[in-house]
Length: 395
Image (cartoon, rainbow, N blue to C red; front, side, top):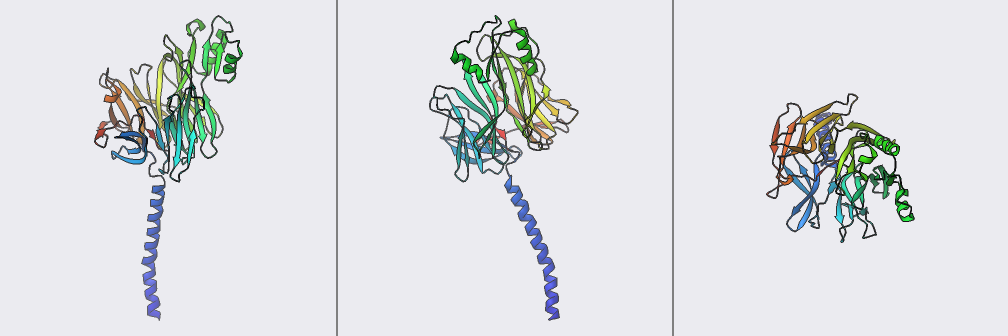
């Protein structure tokens, strides 16, 4: 009996060790599988008679199909949560006046956001991003008035189906004569919604320019309209904040075209609801898409003239120093550099376009942030080159 008991003790040690190792292995893979798309890039690619929502792993150059959707000749956006259990994508109504978002889960649940009943009302949503395990959607919601945008940066709680505006830009009408051209009730009602306002004197204009961190201009030089547009935001998960760029334009001859008065990066704290300006672009320059490093210490973004010229890639430290580094300088061969995103804490990828060339002929590069070396990245989806230029990072 003692010999049998001794053998059991001898066997129990290795068995216990194997059980512990197996448990660690299972837990590790459960944790890995719970966020296996985190840090990769999601978007839509055309495939024969269907469009597909895919996730791209730039390091391996591979694509994972998450969902097939109906084909569209118009640009659409798509985003995926880190587990791949929820997708959100934009869709147009039949009149192409309204672009809205459909959010679907693998359990068959579906929520629609941004759809309007008035088929004559032009509205759209761009740059949707799923955050917080796919429970919340960040996006830019746009309405148009006479060719000009009224844009809002919003958080949409998918479970509660509630919208929260975290930032908005007014559509400003300049009337330097000081006359009230908007006496009728219909026009005045538009101003009362808080998104469309009228400025009639220099003091009102100065106050608005200060609010947008814009350079001062004389009211007679301000044109007739000022409007605001947002870049693609990024989510700082470590600090629960949204980081985004907000650009104020002054219109010129053509409606919708404009001269940049200011382009500022803001950080919005989701908990407190407070926003803070953390970077102001050079005069008449535009801040493009923003991305945050996985460790949350820096953001990368493009800065260029409003025409796209002289496009460079910058990196801003989010610590107290606020140090700004130029990572990619423009040149004749790499005249416009855009769409900077982090692959990991040590590498970013970006698109580069030669002077007088088209976006379709852009080249994607991978930049090593430690030694400054770059290499070309070739991505192919089903044998065709793919730039993933409308893709978003998975959070």
